[in-house]
Length: 108
Length: 125
Image (cartoon, rainbow over all chains, first blue to last red; front, side, top):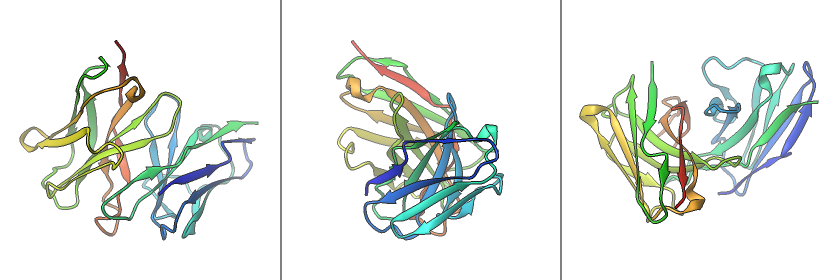
């Protein structure tokens, strides 16, 4: 199952709201996770089951979607949010876990 | 507190076999629902799942790489070992050891809440 993220790069200013998209090649129900990766660091789990925030993740991060179309919204963009974001699908058996190509959120 | 740490060679030659070890703490791979996986990331590129070891001793592999991969565990020492045969320069990447989150409702819910720092592996003669 291929995952496609758009846009490849997104520019935003602190305080703004940005929306990232992730599209699955076929329906995956709500079996989607989002990760944030900063340079030189491993990814960090933000969202699972499309809309559930992982422990310690600020409320300005929200996920939505079902089936094949998903979004990650970052409200009130903070300086520490500038990073690359990846989506990951799961839920099938045997597992064929796959990640999207990533969206880089950069400072406008 | 869950921690994972990768170890192994950072330079391998083409056609050699890569062996990486993940040493973890804060959980037991004999506990129901637990799992440890390997994920890699070529420089400047996206993440790619490689293999997963479940508490039940079930092992799963990426379909595109399954013929080259083997994942095993050493429960007594809280370690998981990944071997990848016939290495090629395109396998140059940072390899991460990761913990399967227990937040999922079922065994099909596989996403990762703890990551090691990663080990960079270069394949070059």
